[in-house]
Length: 548
Ligand code: ATP
Ligand code: MG
Ligand code: MG
Image 1 (cartoon, protein in one colour):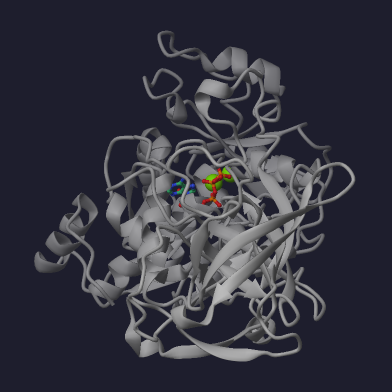
Image 2 (cartoon, rainbow, N blue to C red):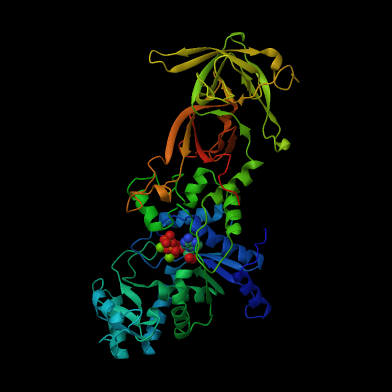
């Protein structure tokens, strides 16, 4: 694997190895299985796995499944598939819920040490007692319960004697701390909910702030990397590890989360898009999910290179979403065959070409990569060209087809437009052209030059295809008028048009990628492609409005 450029976390790891503070590094990627992974997660995945790769350590995939309400095995499966697809292999596949017994035991230990108590305050009361940034909190009236009473109540909580929200277990730290996270945080709550892994064994579940440090400690994680919002929780993280007397002491490091312009990156909102039907699913090609990006046609290489390029920082910023497009173009430039597709077809009859005759012409597969060889494409009396490659009344400097003008058909002949056939409403439905056999591509013809080259496909053998042309799901900032992100969805985020691709594309399979001459890079949709009709997702256009 490629080594990543230096960053502050790498420096820490390398110092810790050199000083002997750790012998081997262990990282983890800890998703909560409450949705599909998105491009932001990819940054964390790359960081954790590449760090361990580079320093010959280990990375665990650990499901942080301590909140039964929102979690589901569908999400577990999708997350595993996405991490693998990105190109990473975990050393251990782990579930935080497998540690519920141990977590419970550690909570009991805290109670016995007088470091945790059962509290009966309502959520509302607890908020009032917590204080504010400028005002210290007040001790709960239940804070001084005896160890025996706390043990008894906690056991009864576990046994299901109380309803949701009736009681919680809180760490006893310091209601006067300037860090609100240390003001006797809740560490266990009651939730009579079936869990995807533990079923109905538990009706109390540990809170993230208590569970996460224990998970890291149990697994021997050395460098627990999380996003900056958790910086204020680090003292609590250290408190939990110390007071629970964990043998292994992990350390938390924070980095800036990835934010992309014009992109929603919160599972809650992505789920809303799915649930309300604004997209076809988590893997809708417009979604910034890993599964959406995959279906759109992004490659693991392009996503990994993107993540490397944005680096790892300690301050939050926003990355231009078009930066990802740069990397997919780079990746596909030499890999994707370049073929012809007519997205909005206009029939052309070559009137002087013999009826019934089909000849095969040679076309290179990738001019920038001669190793990809060439293919044979049919040519005959009937072809399709792009509707907007013809104008009846051309503006100045229009070099494509118009009455009386001659253009080059890519890989074929020069043709001249003679007649324009229209329907009753005056729409152009067909062109009649003549070709010049002397001008055959590759023949070395130099008799005259034409200014325009257009693409085409032979009509009788062309394969019907559906093209999905995408724009960002969210309107650009300057066009937003709504208050919620739903109101600011781009009404034109997908346009579906029907056209044709070359005959030889009947072999194309889901996830195959092509560069369609003059159009851009496309991916064969793995779900909607049928034997009758190929479906292509626009990955990116050829040109970028953005350079890095
Ligand atoms: P969301 O807010 O989208 O639900 P999350 O942080 O709750 O995300 P988790 O499943 O808890 O999602 O995240 C797993 C890991 O991915 C965490 O370590 C988290 O810090 C990291 N992560 C999530 N979003 C980003 C992001 N935008 N950039 C970098 N890392 C991220
Ligand atoms: Mg989270
Ligand atoms: Mg979340």
